[in-house]
Length: 191
Image (cartoon, rainbow, N blue to C red):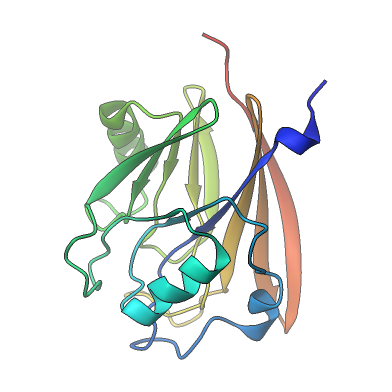
């Protein structure tokens, strides 16, 4: 039986684009994101400002960022591997994946990085899938900022709860002024 006290909470965000494409994170999301509840923050990039990074640090001190194509901070790595609990997690912005968001191209990167979970962004659209026993997550854009193809982007982010070899992903999206939450389960195959 899983002990919920041993769970680890991870905020997954990306494609924030403040101040260039959005003025702020929606208030409906900000009131859900409270300090000292989240152990890790994984960001797929395009924070675009130090102020946005500083805000993330107020939510949790363990912040990891992959460099997006609009990030001003050139010290962020192109990709990063973080180990949390039983999981090796790969973090990448996604503009390097051609075609953008392509499942086969993402699976190739997952194999190259040798990770259990690959978190990617760039498309500004929330999406998850599993392939070959691995989990793939795009948190979308927490601000709902437009991308190169559309201005109709639903603001979204994810919270991941790691409990042993199980990952519960909570998908938050803002639709018609209300926050909607969906749950996705992934269990790591035992080696």
